[in-house]
Length: 180
Image (cartoon, rainbow, N blue to C red; front, side, top):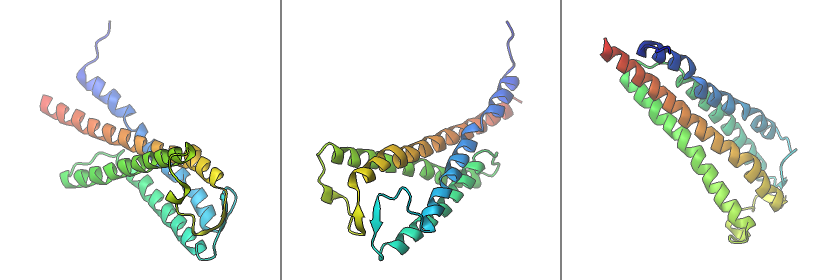
């Protein structure tokens, strides 16, 4: 039976402890192309036609989402790096917790409201479709439930795992310093 030293175990953990940060970065960046497509006026996958008044808002929303996703990808990469300065580490953790919780809350809200609508519990006027000329409500709900909300949920979970790994690496380093 081979017993590894704490230092060997620590190095093994450290070498494998960045995967969630990289996965969160990749997951964020992979969601940019559809937003750019919609921002440029693409309509494949859009469950209806928008009013002329809504088109610029739709484009701006998708450009904003693309920028936010790029920032999320960079933030996730920040969780793969060691941070020596306490204030920088704290700021990174605070923003990262927001990047974890906001998508999870978004997905939870979407799953509950769309699910309740499909079950007949929530009336259609709960949702605002006033900026749409035509909309296939069933397709809209199913796209949200099967594509968009799961994406948000995975994003939040990946950020949560990346934060946990970031904290764990810092803890292993602190423990190693105290052992010296």
